[in-house]
Image (tube, rainbow, N blue to C red):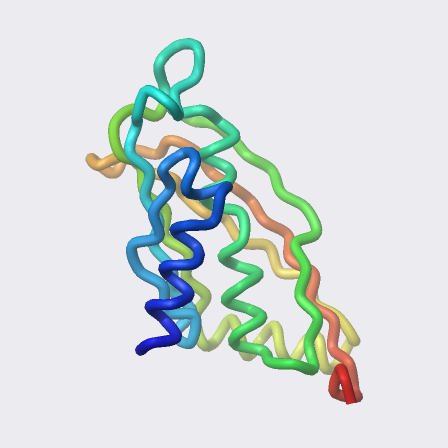
Length: 153
């Protein structure tokens, strides 16, 4: 429990999240789940008064990679390989995103990486407003490499 609170505190104080006001509301890397939100403030608005696109992407950036790193362990190298953002509607008010990788998906990624040496799963995060309207979709391609020998030893 202490580890979760420390991770949550660190992420919420991390400058790329602190500046635009991105808040991690729930983090459970061991269960493959993260929930994030961002309120619209004067300092995170763009020229036309809606959420700045860079902040919408930033709130989605590290979480699939972090979940996989925690779930797969030291024999797997995990990196974000590419990302694409599709803005669907101007974001106003509070926006939220949820990141979840199921145990079945984790096992499929693990098996593929162990069999082929690597896996490159694609995830899509949905950024929604308080009414559940889609604001943006962030597609993430994550590179997972299996190393037969444990790193660092």
